Image 1 (spheres, rainbow, N blue to C red):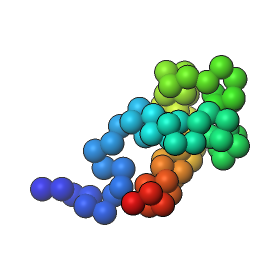
Image 2: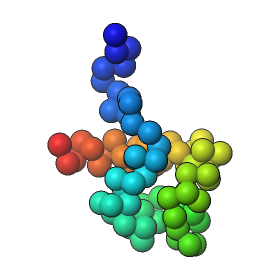
Image 3: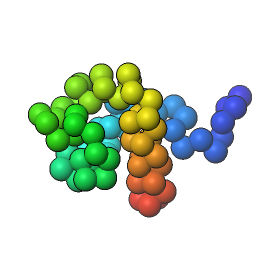
Length: 74
């Protein structure tokens, strides 16, 4: 039984979220939308994942942008 049927993030990993956002927006646009250094100084999926997993406020901003991206593109 799915306990969170209305949660757009249910079943999606942080890596998948970040890969989709990078594919859609690119690193430069992500940096404009969410001002964190891992998006502007030598950006990579791995370095960004390390930072986002340690930093709840940044992860929340990325997840929020993903929800907006998902709603806009569906």
